[in-house]
Length: 325
Image (tube, rainbow, N blue to C red; front, side):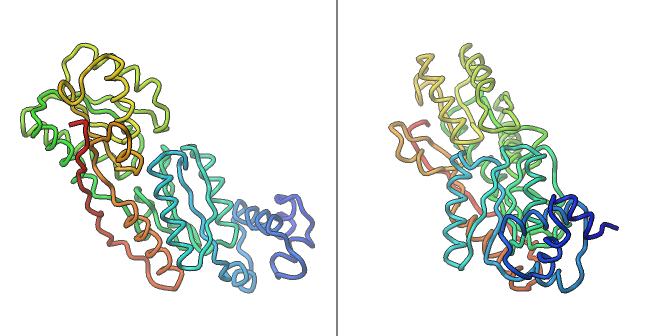
């Protein structure tokens, strides 16, 4: 079992500093406290009950881990989360994992060792973290992270069916799908399975071009989509995000393919910018504000001592008509 000396060595500070942090004595910078608590977490050190109580004092800080805040959907969700937390008297510590499992784990360790009141986890790496081992209250967005961790997501099965049905209603018989990745175990992946089953029932042929595990890396996807569109087989596209749909739209324009006359495109997410673009996308609209509100409400309930509510139903989505179908 680790000792205070081990913690001091791991954190690169004196034993006295560790003792002051554990007993909350004297001036303690946030950097020092975070450093010591992170070292404790890495060594799986369990302080005495007094220190544990001090560590769990309310700080009104919430850690939020996102894969990439520059992605339009996560930017909009994070903004909505921050607003809801602020209304409830909490501040946000934002951690950007860039889809890297190691960086995500580092942030988990840091937040586990710090004194945040809770954690909102939007994990999108190839490694599924078991958040049920964390001491702090946790809510997961878009991925199951343990039996006792509440998970919030949109109804992506409904979303996939809405997109597929709309394309079929518009007369599409050969559909190109793009987005997602088999190794990324997030709730949103089922949108593609739902669309495929709908196409199968209606005799529609399809091809699926998967994306990168890093969903902002579009270069190789763009090349594959360009090749697929060039032969003129496809009359419809279901893109797994508005970002991908915009890329498909640009590719179609570059090849002088008329949208929506010759090619119909449906996106996904319904980010605000797509509604006001010069060529608004038809897209499946996720209820971002409601998703954020639900995440925050479930987390605060745990912070206030209630049992985690793991019965959350996926939130319904809608289809917003644009100019691409």
